[in-house]
Length: 285
Length: 285
Image (cartoon, rainbow over all chains, first blue to last red; front, side, top):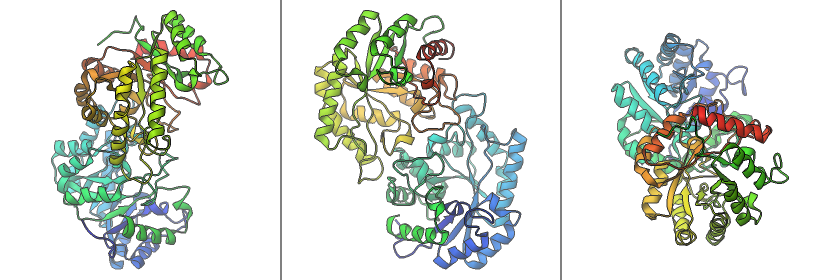
């Protein structure tokens, strides 16, 4: 297991942690200022969200590389299915391809896939998962041509209805098995999987298909379905145990901190949030 | 699969569906009035919550039997572990035994077990599950003497931190296997398990250890962690598919409707809620 006590170059910032800082939102930091703040602190990687790019993906990617910060990837694909997805297969595939383009323009290696919830008019997750497989298969070759890997992220089962009919790593790996493509892998976010006693077995099964590892913490109590994630160490997730499993499976990439926290971390000075993030990463994770 | 279109005698009311109607709460129905309302509608069973008993368990049980309504069981054991459990092992075991006594006094066959969340000072669910096993083992003989079965109910993983470190049927069956007692089985609540693609396999594994089957629905969106359950048919759970799996495993007991719904069903006339419940059960489930 890697020792981060004295080296946090494997730490990556997901900009959601700063409340998707954009001109006119949060503290109003530009992408460039956020990159600089990461570089100053020795944070090795960064992950952006699509709305932050504003048509400037190439320029932002270049700025990051010049600053010595690796663009790990982009959040995220459109929902592929369910009540929040674009309307109809073609609209989903078109936007999916655009998100692949944006990842490539940014110079990012990985596009995170959040699959969406239960397709209206159906019951349970089975039919929706079949739609996910169909829509993934429609873009795999294109992603491969553009040099972008697709990381299927299982989301916590509490999002099963609206945001993700893919509730466990087991389900994500079943899809990877079905599509059998080097372009497709999984992202493991402690927020979504911390409770899953089957995880050690599934991580072993995942092996080198693990394309991302995301950090935050599960607070007790959790007061909001979406925007009440905790900073590492403030919750009950076994962060070291989870990282140990991921690394035993062969993962040696970035550890990406992604904290949605409307009432706590998003209200603080982003510079201080980054300082705490670095310290907690070294001490706790 | 049983056909309930013209026969709902297998339907049971969990009184939570009426907002735990008690003197001074909800519509203020007494236990007896609730029993009468079930009997009038041909609802075959009823499940009470401990606070409703107010020391009158035997009398309430007798009243139900005379009205032709079977007391299916009692909700619920104390939390056995985690931040909401009674303080310390002895306090948990003592209250656990009292809840077994109340079930027996009521003439109920089944006490539902909600295990509680992550034990303070620990991380992840593993240590907490071991504490659950220890505390269950301390009461199994006593429950057996009193003729009460204990039904371990896995709760949705969104309760992992505070209410239940037992997130899946697989985890519940692992505990049953470890303790290997006829007194111990599982309760399957569609609200908690609807998203789980591993469920068919686990239901088959469970077989005759299934002691209860609970109905409601998962709403999209769900707006409250605890009190926003849907009436059958209003959400995305595959209710028939779930019942089919439970019955294929050998279950032929009551289907218990348990709907926590502070802003919808609890605000309605309880008599009308029961009427809708009966109709939905016949039409949808």
